[in-house]
Amino acid sequence: MHIATNTRPVILTGDRTTGPLHLGHYVGSLKSRVALQCSHEQFLLLADTQALTDNAGDPEKVRRNVLEVAIDYLAVGIDPTLTTICVQSALPALAELTLLYLNFVTVSRLERNPTIKTEIQQRGFERDVPAGFLCYPVAQAADITAFKATVVPVGEDQAPLIEQTNEIVRRMNRQIGRDVLVEAAAMVPKVGRLPGVDGKAKMSKSQGNAIPLSASSDEIRDAVRRMYTDPDHLRVCDPGKVEGNVVFIYLDAFCEDRQFVEEMKAHYRRGGLGDVTLKRHLEDVLQALLAPIRERRAHYAAEPDYVMGIVREGTRKARERTEATLAELRSALGLFSLT
Ligand code: TRP
Image (cartoon, rainbow, N blue to C red; front, side, top):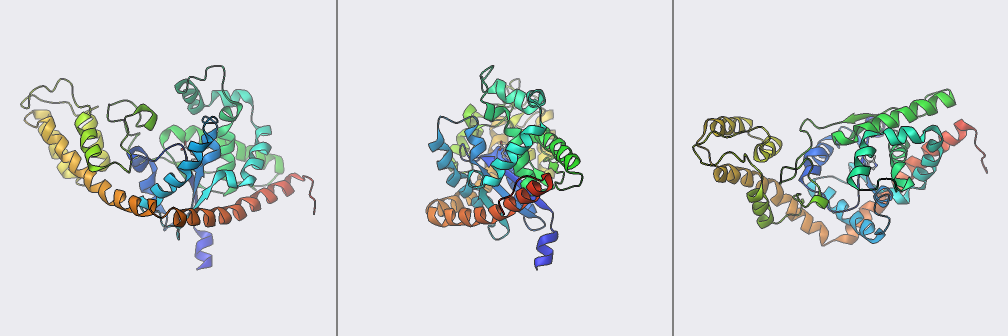
């Protein structure tokens, strides 16, 4: 049993604790985490320290969402006996590794990171970027390497961060003269980034175009009704466009019955399939997906002490793991030791 545990490849991924998770997280990452937890040793990081890099003025929100995101994990089927759930800010080794790695990264390299460039624009930071925000890719490299993770399931927007992590790994290993740290591979889902219900590039709570995992059945129905389709598809008998049609993007992402989706696409293209009927199909799919998640969510939300117990136990385990990597690195670098 122990041997098997130790040879499973390690996954580390996480989420900023800024709000409850939504369908974009589900297709982008949560679904594969549930599938991978048997074959991998999986750690999920409640990234509260990273959340503070652009929410420093609202630590209460960041703290509250540690519990909310943990509940989301359990509700989608993360099994705490298979997956370790832990809190970033309670793992001091991560902060220490970040500080060491910062010496192996240039400011211009950080400023060139495409993910960061976009995020700085989105947040309107312009010249007033918090230093912690600019440097969060280094902290994320600390997260990944502290667990010696080789697989990091993330959305495609995070791929440049994994690239930067591996640069740090190579730079550190070269400095030390042997491979203490291991490189990681991003595991990007086949389904691209899920657009918001308004058709905007990304589903995001702050854009108000997200369907949270906790959505009630009325909220799901309203969201699907508001969904952007083909603006030129005016009459049912008109041929409609499938490409860029949000309803079809969602059906591709969530409907298991591929053949049915292909038939609907053909029908929509040739005309005769109305938006109302099409949306009813999608609504059925989403209601069926979210109903059991919502139920389990309510169950865990009523037991916050139980959930926090899981989080504390996971954090203890993660502490041991991350401290071990830090100790190894400190000794390899020949840093001062009290003992
Ligand atoms: N950056 C991720 C997000 O925005 C959260 C995160 C923090 C993460 N540390 C990580 C993801 C390490 C993968 C690996 O949600």
